[in-house]
Length: 399
Image (cartoon, rainbow, N blue to C red; front, side, top):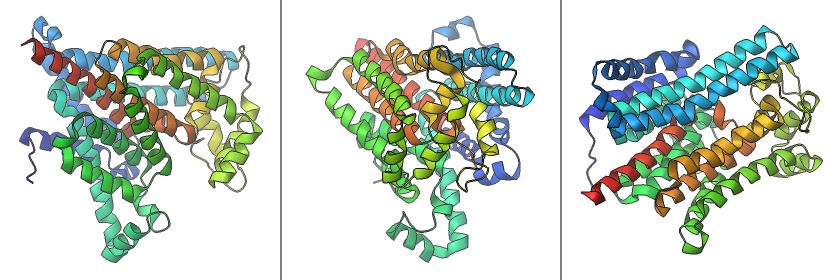
């Protein structure tokens, strides 16, 4: 079996790999990724500026604008709402600065992905995926320089208890499962090598909640493809209801017992520590986007100082956006946007979308999917690639 790769995709994949390099980010700042990836925005912007108005009718332009409309604009609304909340609550400049930084980060991710989609069309999903895989290959190489080939073999034999500090990459692990779902469910026969590499890397990373989310996603996809279960809107609404149910469960005492049984009691302790900052009632307006990431590191919870994340994005979003804000945001993400983009799509297209949304929902339960640039980029580009494939198939059928 030979590996076919488009030469024009090699350089952009390397740029993505450099941008997401943990080594380079740690040596510089969190802005490093955006500075490197800005090259795509500049090139795409220049091309659009110099092109004719007929460009707006092309698939690449419509797809790029869909990235902006459905992935960037919501964060503009969240930032505006959060600004009002921060003023009402008189939280201070540190909370405002974090809100601006967090909101702009997600807007920039959507803009960068839109630019890559505009420049490389359907190849954009391969470029971002390969860039992330290249970055993980560099992590494997760095690990080998520290622990040797024998250490790598030892980790392969026992991935849960050996050298996790070298191989467990949260953002990359969550990102690659999104790509794996996309490739397995859309065009597995033509992507065998890429799928094989993704599976090997995910095995080294061994993110258990991501594996659970992947399995659940496959099950949802298989069930949905049976004729009697093909009600896309109802499935989307069910995912939204599940997010509400888990948020309520997170505030219940049984949640601590559940987390303890899973061997991750510290996650429940983090949630407990945040109870002083929110109420579950319709009048609760939230604390503003980015609030949790400011407060949590200041708490010393059961011997866990300087905690970086709540490891429960659903509850985090409720704390920050409030009762009404949370409901609106999650209805938008799980119901409105999917129906708007894929409501008239084929059953296969809808099944892949539901699989990816199911996977994201499961990871939100115990981790920070929305906090990582890599995961957001993978989510946006896979969902847009699904839409592009749908439109391309319709065009081919008509011709």
